[in-house]
Length: 182
Image (cartoon, rainbow, N blue to C red):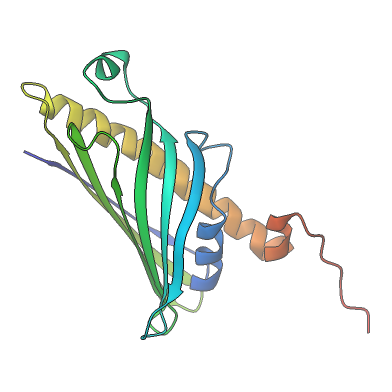
């Protein structure tokens, strides 16, 4: 039986700041498992929504016995995000491509503006293992790991939001901003 994972958080930052932080989340010192992110497509659909497809390359945090049963130490994940500027909502869906014959992790993260200064975040995941006799343990191991990574991800977004608020968004690109002196 699949395991479910859910967490929520309210960022005390406006939607545009939180979504700016999301796009700058990787690389970071708390998520060294994310090795590469490649944008495969970015379009604006007929509804004016930004749709982005990415492939992420991650190192698996798995015990050696799982490598022995065929789960590779590096995983590729497909991610699709839809940003709706009118509704002030961003939905990010991801699913592992690698190792999907052993485990499937389907995740949906939703960022929704609560008001002008707060953004609600909800993360949901369904973890399904196909390993006979140990699927429940493998799913629980994955849920525990996801709980840890989720907390680190929230901390990263919070830190980036603070930095954007205090230094401006260009500071995340290494560009010093100078006050306008006119």
